[in-house]
Length: 503
Picture 1 (tube, one colour):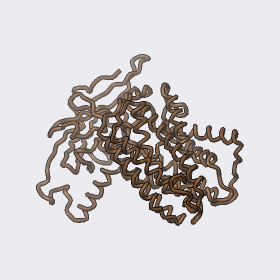
Picture 2 (picture 1 turned 90 degrees about the vertical axis):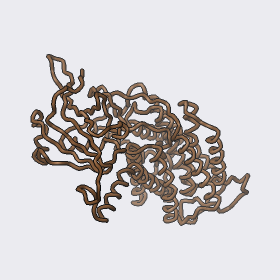
Picture 3 (picture 1 turned 30 degrees about the horizontal axis):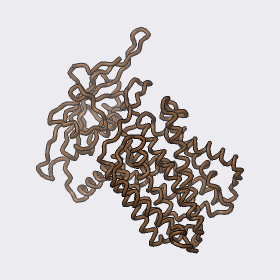
Picture 4 (picture 1 turned 45 degrees about the vertical axis):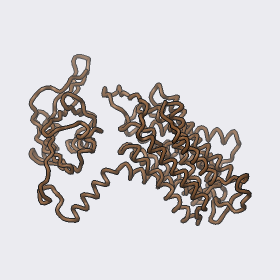
């Protein structure tokens, strides 16, 4: 049971003033909750102020979470209301059409016992008054004065507005480092098989995920929520083929060519979204898909079209070349990986908020380990025992780089609009070219550059056209453990390709 905020006069007031740049929060301690705020009162005093950097267009989540942290409270125990309507942390003052002087009611969850029945009671904790004063000059209190302060203020503002984008760029750097480690490992004798690589990397990911979920107290850490376990299993199988495709192709393709082929996933995902999720797929997107296919042909350079060149780059050592047959086989494996990645991402889109993002990672890693182990037994693939320190170090680096990349990517998607953030996916080709030149002394050929440009241009076009389309509704997962109806993910999953979700 729950009830709306009591209509009582609060003694704890937060006066938040928006000027487009700063928020000033003044807190007066309510003696009714003296025990809760005792530490905060000693630290800040009754009339002290806390200042946050924000904008009117930014979500209120940072304001709420920072205040709760400084007050030594859990954000799960707070609810915020505007005119009896509940406010979500991801909403912005501009979105709420808040006017000068409007108040936000913040309520505190309390548990009460009546006999053997325990129910939740929401008591009014404080009100937040919002206003929008304007600086008349740069010398007003709180306004930046020196050039250094202006630069520092502007730099922090840019970083705060693009935190999700920067995290996503960092994830692409770690993915490129992981791919480089895989390619270097293929060149060390004895060469490790693709299946064993997957087992090692995903075992590390699985262990890290289980530790995180145990610490965070996420329910059903191994099997996931009921009703969508078949989707989680399908996501795992799709992710396995996506991972197998990129790892196998790195044996015979250059790093940049293998990476750019993964950019076909937005095209396949758009087609799958249209077929299975009812999302739009128009003629212009079909044309972009054909352009991408032409780019793949330029990168693969099949012998039936381009003859039989004898020195195609793509070996695992500097200056090493591969045959046209091996290159074509690697391209086929990469395309299989694209289909797997598209399957995984479409499934994640169908799952939506009904599962924690860690459930996706657990099923992904668990299925990869099981399928790879069974495949090695069936095909009688020998297990390579590391005998060199370099061999073992690269194997561990692959697992760590992959896990860090997935975490940064997920954090980036949660902190920014997916359509804006995932544009950073294409920075991976920059990292790939740089690392490829450093470790393999390889410069992309002209046809590969042209094919890369065609694929990236088509993928960006599809992403931009998908951004303005209406997405299919996703059901909300309700947690019965704490009685709060709240999504486990902080933001909805956009149909725009997230880059390396399946990997």
